[in-house]
Amino acid sequence: MHGLQQSVRATQPEAGQRRSAWWVRALSALPLPVLYVFAAFLGWLAYRVFPYRQHVVRENLSKAFPEFDEARLQDTMRRYYRGFAQVLVELIKAATVSPEELRRRVKILNLDAARTLLDSGKPVLLVAAHQCNWEWMLLGLSLQLGYRVDAAYKPLVNPWAEREMLTIRTRFGSRLIAAKGLLADILKHGKDVRAICMVADQEPTTSEHKHWTRFLNRDTAFYMGAEEIARVTKYPVFFVGMRRTARGFYEMELKPLSLGGEKLAPGELTERYARLVEEQIRAAPPDWPWSHKRWRLKKSLYGNR
Image 1: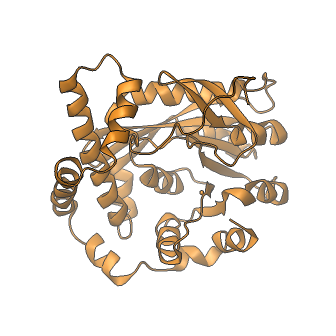
Image 2: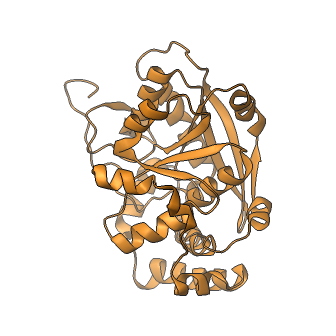
């Protein structure tokens, strides 16, 4: 989300000092209401004119919510494309948005629970999902936590896109670590007082260690990276939930998943995470990326692997 060279580049401090391309900054300078008009047009195109992976969206939603009739299914699909387009323009806006404006648009609940642990010198692990605007989630945490935020991510193949995303994501001081280099970074900086962030609801196609569970009515594999890091480091773990309160406004909440050093059965922490992810998806179905091919892996008939 790979190689040693990419890991080193992703963690260089000067990444936060770069500027986005001039045309990205020019678009970003437009008022959000104007950008949302463009988003509405993009969402309409993706839903009505040039359907983007519509068969994937329909299949995923139909299996997750078999109780939806055709009218509700179509409404959820329409809202999904509209919301996804809004997140896209919000990502563009992130190139120039002021700290004050972002704080106004992204509120964080229960932040003191993690901050108290950090104040005592304990690093924490924050795990989230691709719900709502996960890019603004990182920026909001970077601004409001009061401690260094290091985020695991998957480097992009395109060098220009990689550079632009690094520029935006590190605007407010966060540090990005290529996912394959995260364990090595933790071993090197294990005592640093910081929050390590992971978005862990992707399909673990390249990981040998998977946790299988029923998720949205389907057998689903989850990464066990967060669980393995928590077991080795004994870091406290929080789930970062996010919900949309209005167009362009979000509320995040930190919920404890595990106390530092808590002894859990294998897979239990990942199971707790999966249940909270499913809970927030069911509360707001349009705000999860249904066009992603999440269920390509099939569970083995010979066990949970």
